Length: 244
Image (cartoon, rainbow, N blue to C red; front, side, top):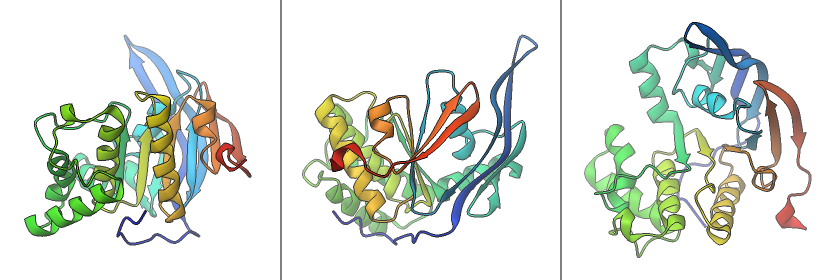
């Protein structure tokens, strides 16, 4: 599988989280979602963030993905303190640097697979001919060359998630954030999505996978385990389950 993109070489930290705290307020009551986190993710790493419901996984993903700001602490992406950016700056940075894969696919229902993949390239101002070519390339790379003119309703769940992966890849992001990417899929389709993510990792992509499933988490090379808004484990996986 070749994604015809610039390869990112490992070595430096692409994500750095320092003293991270996120508190929500419900009816005047403080609800701490993240209670102080420090960690780093190197360029080219495949890291899963795992934990039960309410552990802070989704909140952490929103902070890393530039969808929200911390109450205190900092998030650096490629050395940039994204926690200090204004709304427009945050949106621009997110569109340039982060590729999202969601559990519910989040595809435009009236747009073809090709048009869905082209969408982030439109936001980047890429000319029509170039963005169509790039969208076709990434759809081919995820095995959907014969489905690019289909609507989401004409695709299986696994095919829709592959469209979502292609859409995340198209702008050549610094980081791919996958939020429970197998959660709505059957076992076979979920295994195919994990295979694609591992192939992306072999091509030196930086992937952060959020999941509550132990088996899915262990497909990464490292697991950061959360509970009650705290990091309770940071484990290197020396042999993934698909490798015997």
